Image (cartoon, rainbow, N blue to C red; front, top):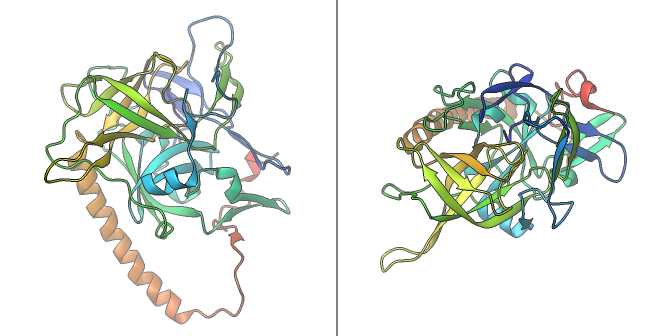
Length: 360
């Protein structure tokens, strides 16, 4: 299925469900129009039929999460769900803010070799944070943050086609600057919380609403509707791997995750007890599944990956502290008399060479 974006380090994608390599596609096209973000999509899986297959949400041509509903700013801010874009590839994913400067996402979304070409959006509609002026891409500094560092689980295996062994498709992003103050961090599950077959979860993501691919070439013929945050409730847990590192969700009822939702959260609501209040926890990170998005979705479990998340977070937070000290030294020596605009090229070193191939 993927739900995957072009593989950042090699220019190809891996369909983790069947272990097949696929061609990467240009998934971001910028046009100077009312909608500057005309197309955000992920690369497509290989279908088994001989004709182009497509998926379209019957409820709305503006949907992302299958069978879901539009999520407003209040939902986005309360749950810490974010959009992620790799400007090198024009690839779109989803993630969860788990600390003021850390984002949890899928390993296949991450470009570890040029992490600073990745940006994170803190808005339910990504198009509202993008402008094109004189051929330059401007990102709203109030709602977009650049990535400073990206770390994948070292055991990540994009070639695996196993449904009984974890692919460790999980990663963390460290931001150059803290997230906007108004957005809350997503809560990770406490020790002792278990996810079991039959539990009901909610999903969120910025993925596509319509998708069509030529099965003979792997080229995307149609990809529409991404960049807008949506959510879907009452998704049933189908299986939990014996290792506890992955979980599958039932999408046979026409609701669930699709392309571009990769890295996005699965939420488990826990009822209040006599000693603890009700809470919502991020228990999954979107990984993969069949290309038509209507069978199952495989998620990395944050419960099974808890040790890796904690250890890697500690390393990244330490690196952030070191960078902050260096930045203070630079800032104390710098002076500026100009007033900055809220829209600015936050990636000045990227603006020319990297963005040219994806501008139209």
